[in-house]
Image (cartoon, rainbow, N blue to C red):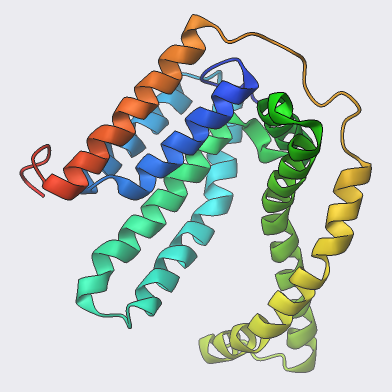
Length: 240
């Protein structure tokens, strides 16, 4: 059973709110990030019990990837102490983006994402809508694909060099990075073709924006403005 989407009802409004929410997640100072995390957790808790469990499982699956992006950002800063705050913000921002996406686009299924993006761009042109929807669906599908490729490479390396210690595990992971990326990117063309062929015949139902849609978008826009001001001037969060 797929969880019912929280937030606005119109697909374009949901997509816009998701973009604004993700932007805020990477702009907010530490206090703002804590508030966003608490807010999304409370919103998820208000969902029906089955939907809340679905959300928790989906976000938990992506938490290691959020940590990985944070470590990558710290690596880019040469693991200096000055770069640790930015790395933590990258990890938390990634988690918040996924947590918000799971509420607005439950399940992150490529077909669902295709429909939402298609409706959001349909007024601008059919070609743009199809291309944008396909690109969004591919991005959603790429993480599970990467995970499957990683698992296959790990099984192959373990069969050849069955070491069980921590050092052996790290060695296998390092040896799999380049083949992992090469195999994953090589399959993107095939994945794009399959997703395009399986796209919905009627991607999304037509609907009008309601007052609640505008309120969600306006609230997220105000929040982005506030956290951007706090990040630049420091006058909203004096304890930063």
